[in-house]
Length: 413
Ligand SMILES: NC(=O)c1ccc[n+]([C@@H]2O[C@H](COP(=O)([O-])OP(=O)(O)OC[C@H]3O[C@@H](n4cnc5c(N)ncnc54)[C@H](O)[C@@H]3O)[C@@H](O)[C@H]2O)c1
Image (cartoon, rainbow, N blue to C red):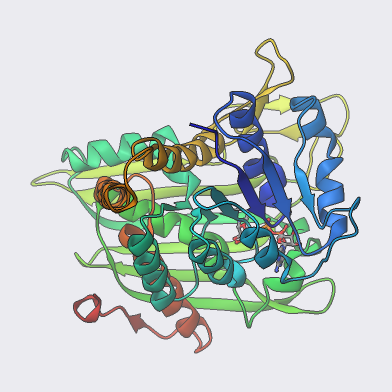
């Protein structure tokens, strides 16, 4: 089988930090073919092509940029449509654009018969998730949502033990994820504004997703209180949020999020999850410190980069480059494993249907999708659209001063 081409739409932070290096590594192993990156501006793809850490880790590898600086091609927010249309059917499109554009990019990819890997959240509205599910199922195309915390071994350990009954039943919990203050100065100030998104929508969804991933419970009601704050460019955002998610067994998860972890504090952010549970006659407890993972480094000079500190507590678990003898460096961690898992899911759907007549191939791909949905390890539109319901309810709540918004599962298809 010829390795598939992969097109990444969006060339910002997540593409630089996780998506592109993960794909470069798979390309180096011969599992995927040509990689392209399409952004709305030439400046973004140029900066990505010259990123020093990527050049050092993947010597001799490159991506095809859109807009293409050598061919004076088009640019702008609609360029991705042209580029996707030019891709032969049943390759892979990765959506790595701001949240509110995911739907358009994913639907464009599906309508051109492409498998999809998308960064979280899938979309911002439940009905959009349903539309994606229907279109993907009709065409037998994989859509994997990249909730990488699912591929942190500690999440998989907790999930297995919870489902074996070792903790009892979840009752009360708290989770937090605060990004560093300097995020306010990034491109976020242009899109993560009050009318589009908020801190809970942006990063709170990780822990809502994780509590479902571990327990299998579904959210039943949401209230989100947000504090309006100003970005450096004057745009307004809900940069601090406090959410309460009630689950279908009556359990309650409090989630705090913000772009406000001090730049001088160690670690790239602060985050973690505590879940109190109850058994027959004993309390159960899950505590994950997802920021401090046991490493304390004190450097002799301050490293380059926003939020870098002399005293650091790096996480070895999310995404690191290791020198395993070369060439270049090897990306490791759950950030890599998550992308690899989704791409492998696409590869399998193609490999197992190679050479079959199209009606049989389609039926087989559809059966494989059902298997992925049921396994519940990879987030798919069918098994994770509770996240869209939470986001939708959360947006309604935050825009109404934090009022409780119920999620009516009985009316959901
Ligand atoms: N922890 C996580 O899972 C995680 C972390 C960071 C970001 N994300 C998600 O990744 C997505 C992007 O975030 P980011 O941090 O990379 O943001 P970013 O602002 O750094 O980058 C967004 C990129 O999208 C490009 N873009 C915007 N509109 C486009 C269009 N019409 N066509 C092509 N390109 C377009 C921009 O040029 C930019 O390169 C968001 O959905 C975000 O929620 C997930």
